[in-house]
Length: 309
Image (cartoon, rainbow, N blue to C red; front, side, top):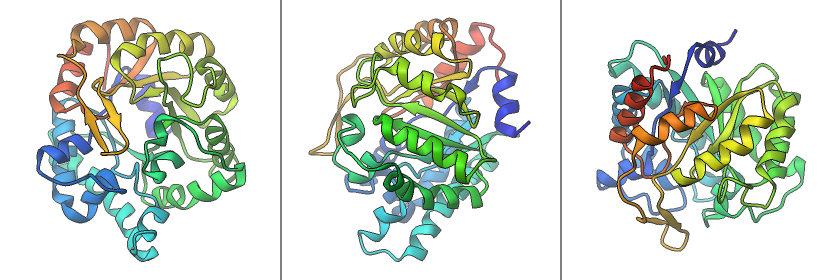
């Protein structure tokens, strides 16, 4: 049994929260095509500290700052390929060092693999409106995945995926070329009913039931109000562990590359027990959530008397 498998079999897992918004709080400019990955150059020590804060808040899994850190993302802007790979290495090491500096004795490092739409840097992870062949999708994702494997991540976070054809290409890539690695797959959904490209969420979840390397499946970066509807489409269609990590309920403006606040306080103590009862067993936060939110999620899990790592 792999480390990730042993964790998810042991109880409810608390994930970390947003990276970009935490960097913005520290006056780090992420309003660029690299988004939070730009801090790998600007201020790596802040990335490490943010990871540490999430572990101390109760998270047992850190997601590397590689969502938008693709080799081509960096080389398109003039960096050498060597430097691009070194930045991916740095992202993994910063997550690992954050764990070492935290109060936790153990934890997981998940290598973030964002969608092709994130590379486009125009908000298409919230539309899924892009089209490549399976081989083109695989050629795009292969270099980062291979490097994250070399860096020793515990699991791949195939996250914020809005395009069903892209996820199928990724699943086949894992089966064909990286058969020994674990991954979780998290779709981007507009309202908990379908992916942004229009594919019914229930259909997408069902497709991956037979791909054993996908150890958990679910949704992320959608409003908390969409999580329960999503779970109703996920739970009946999978035997895998179910992962949910919503954003704070804000709207993303692709023109300004900023989030527009649309919500009041999030009542995690009320929402988390409902999500647990509906089948979720890996819970965290995405964009605009903070260590305080993760601490509230962790406490909500404790208070519902769920076993967690």
